Image 1: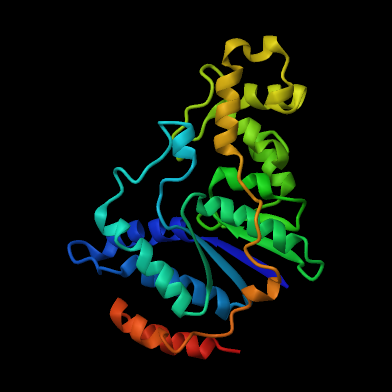
Image 2 (image 1 turned 90 degrees about the vertical axis):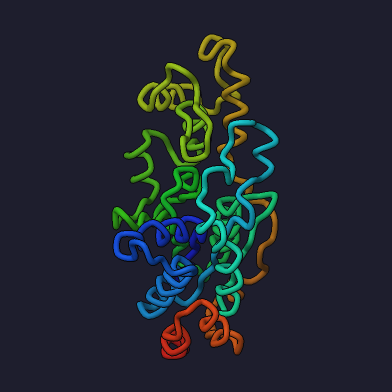
Length: 273
């Protein structure tokens, strides 16, 4: 089986801004939510059987307590924020496993789910659907891969190394040095992607860097590595078959009506196996 793990927050952003090109001045209040649901149904129509979606129930997490500049909900459009919780309810009504994250982030849940799924010998492949750079640390060979929908590419371990210059396990070290603007931390001044990869490949973990490599900047680099390291502990599920999609719940028709898209139940019922 193939396990598909989706970043629901990313998908919501993608559909919210993608729809603007044709909705113009008349945006549907839940247009991004229905867009995500149709994306999932399309995946199911193409053969996906085991699916889990992680969402940021709130954007802020424990990382905001570690670093004041870490990403927050400030600047996120109210019309987009208003669709976060409806998406979670709609996913559950459609029968999709959803993990709404509060203290941790959606990316942490994806990392945890990937670890659990990969531990099951029945799983042929784990596909993590998100472009977030920090998820590259979860890639393992060609069995746990990152799916880049916009670029229509699959990143296995070889592709991670080709893109970043380091192995997946060292992505937190790499990002700590170069920063991640999407998450709001700048990295170490004067260190770019090439020099970061050189340092990591020469010394390994930032913890093992000699004093001369970073000097007084090492504590800051270690802080940024804390931000970049995904928390994959925990037990989101005990059996990968808990992720099998078995069709929409009885509540889905009413949910779809509230979302303003009566096509959804018909499409979902056609997908039922």
